[in-house]
Length: 318
Image 1 (cartoon, rainbow, N blue to C red):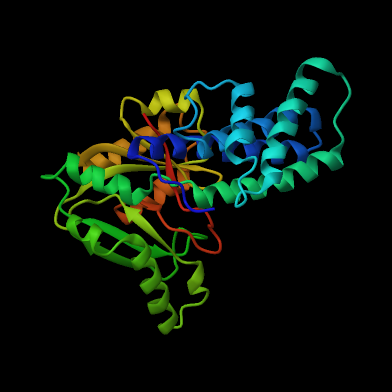
Image 2 (cartoon, rainbow, N blue to C red):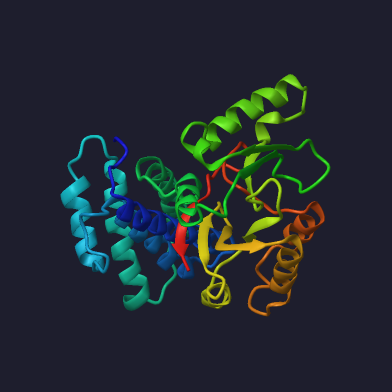
């Protein structure tokens, strides 16, 4: 099946739905691993529910009912030769299973059956991530440029090993905003890995490209960046006064503010202040903040590698 064609608005919606779906999958996987089989059923279903909506973006309403979505999966993809039939059947099975275990029975589901469903669901999520276009960091950077033409003078990217914060080979690459259309992050990643290989850097294919917080080579002006392990209503409320964008980065999240902080002193103060916020301190990566302050700028990964296989993509704007 070819990649879907979506408008910018639908791409944002699809990105959010994929992020919700992958989060539900992670919850289902953890519950099954710990033997909480009955509790996992609803998360298995909601993984399918969100992923199916992403595949049907533009064909179903934002507030589509569970029954209607199931019907639409059959109508649109049930007889499509280039779409795996087992994903349509899985959606129906999980839809019925969720109703059964939520409302009609007291016994526990079969663990072997749940693990089989989890394996198919994993393949379904992977399939959707290939064919549903998402809003990427590249798209967001172009938006930042439009909003802050006079303040964003440069973007900088670090090429680094994501398994450690410090004491590995690290390259920094600066470019003016207009170069985004000429030489994007994927090209930076490809050529950087080749270059590192020529320098005999070990495990060079593990390296990724990260966007840096500094937006000017000659002044300490920064975007506020956070690495967050989980997002909940309290976390979103704490970030709302700052305003920005949440990205799904695998099992965690990245936050990039839309606010540009002028000066290194003000930036460090903001970063340290976030560590004291009672709603954030349990969820933001303290090591990421501390090493960023020591280095003089923050970095968030924007490409994938063998050790970080998910390219960060848009989850929601807050």
